Figure (cartoon, rainbow, N blue to C red):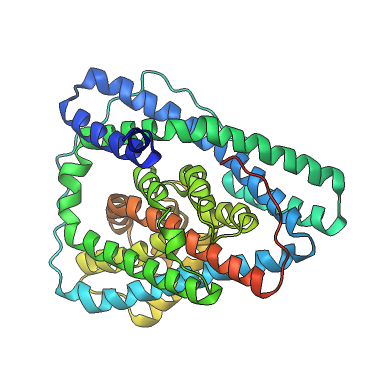
Length: 396
């Protein structure tokens, strides 16, 4: 019993339940404190994200040695193909289902969150994308030149970041998620907005699970291993992603979950999970495609043509690779596509942002869970091509 109570999934779920209940009972004065604590904790977690990316990806690439370029290319290819196929699946479902849905768009009546008591900003040392690019460049260059000193520094950085994740980030995540749901419950997002698009949300969630099933089955076949050995460890990561709506904020938990699987190679986990958290957004892409088709039907009376949607899907896969791993990152990165290719006006983009926000938590959870499948594919790729396994020590 004690083991269950102290487990991360239990603490995360407890934070969600307490947050929802407290949000219904709180007044404005208390909410001033709640939104302030939530903001500070979010800033602290976001500050750690570039450090986690550099501390895991760069050392992982150097360990790959002469195989670094090949593994990086394989990872990016897997992420792009997964996102594109998820988008095309969603597009097909949209053409088949949206014309038969009666979607109501009334979402008024939400409370406004009070102002912060104080605003303690903790700027990141660099953006997430800058950290990703820096990690790749430094890792590849160190591997090509066999720079022993830099490789040693990166290994020490890996150990330091691992301690930050274990002792700071993971312990405060349940608290952060609790305060997040406290705020959502208070303003009415959970009780009023979600039912508005319940049909659409349920359809998209079903799409997420279908795509995850496809990914894990394909990964199991390719790697010749049991995918259940991976996915059964992903409960905490799924809950964290749903609560934070951020792949970046969930990175620490995702690493911990993936390392519990004996099927995944540890060197592939250290390399793949931080990389995929930033470039593999299959759930968000699937969600956005279905929602843009829904909004187009609602506001403009028709769904975009097949040719237009295929072009949108292909470009969205590229934009998703560069999208920030923060709440709404995918749709924010692709606003140019939404307005330029689909022709949405300001009303359309506003509605798109609103309904995407309602479902972003589950899209992010799909992204994170799907990363485990792609890492399994990388493990299979490394084994098939006889890429030597690195003997790494971890305390996670």
